[in-house]
Image (cartoon, rainbow, N blue to C red; front, side, top):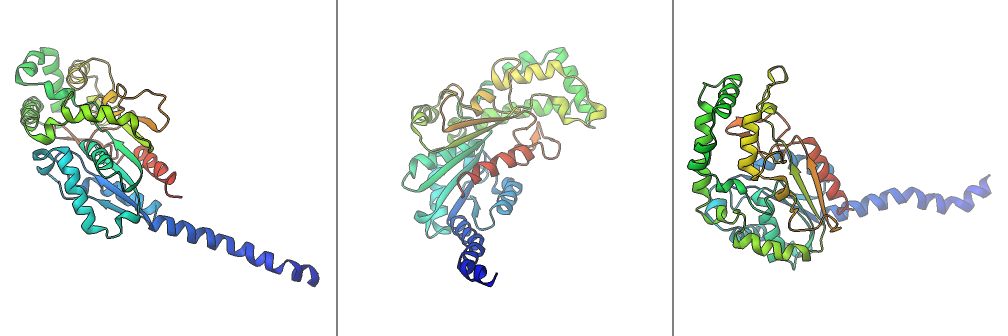
Length: 327
C-alpha cells in the first residue's frame, strides 16, 4: 500500500492542484475583461443598476462600467456618432490599460446603436461581443405620429379605453388622454435634435448601419421586448381588454396592427429583421414577450421586473451571452 501511495504521490498532488490552476486562469481572464453599459435616449447610467449588479455577481473579477458622459439631454442634443466619441474619451480616462482588455458592449435602446457606433469607430480595441436591448436598428416609426394623426385616431372606442384604464389605475378620467398628447408633442420635439433624428427610420445614420452590419464578424445578441397590451399595467384582479387602445397604439408604434413591439419600438426593428437574414450565424435574436421597453408607459409605472433592464429573462440571457466570452 505504501508503495502504491509513493508511486502515485506526485500524480495525486498534481490532480489536487488542477482546480487551483483552473480558478487562477478564470480569475485572470475575468480581470482582463471589461463590460461597458450604454444607456438609452435621455437616460442615465443608473438605469443599469440591476443588470450591473447581476453581472458583477456572475463575474466577480470583471470590470463593469456604466458610462455617464452623455446622460440626459446630451443623448438628445448630440448625434450618436459624437456620443460614441465622448464615451470613448470618458472610458480612456477611467481605464488606463484599455488596449489590453477584452470588451463586451451592452446597450439599451439608443444606447445599443451608440455601442454599435463605438464598435465601428474603435475597431482597434479587442471587442468580443455586443448585446442590444430593445434597440431600434431600423428606426422608430412612432416618430411619424404628430398631433393631427393622433387626433384622427382618438376615436370614441379608443377614448373609452383610455379613460377606463386611467380610472382603473387610480388617475382622473382624462389623465392618460392628456399624457398621450404630451408624449406625441415631446417625441416630435426630440426628433428635431441630432440624437433623435438619428433614430428616425431612413436616417443617414441608420443607412450606414444597414450597410455595415452584415460585415460585422463579432457575435451580436439582439434582445427584443414584445409587450403590446395595456392591461398588463394593471393588477390581475382588475384586468380588462383594451382592444381599441391596443390596436391604435400598435399602429402608432409599428405602422401595422397585430405586430409585436415593446410599447416604443417594433420587434422587427429591435431584431433588425429587414437588415439581416435570420440565417446570419453571428447575429442571434431573442424575444421576451412580456418585457416593456422601459420602466414607464405614458408615465404609468410598469410592473416590477417587467422593464427590459430588470426582467429576469433578459438578465439571464445577458449573463449567458457574457459567459460565452468570459471563459
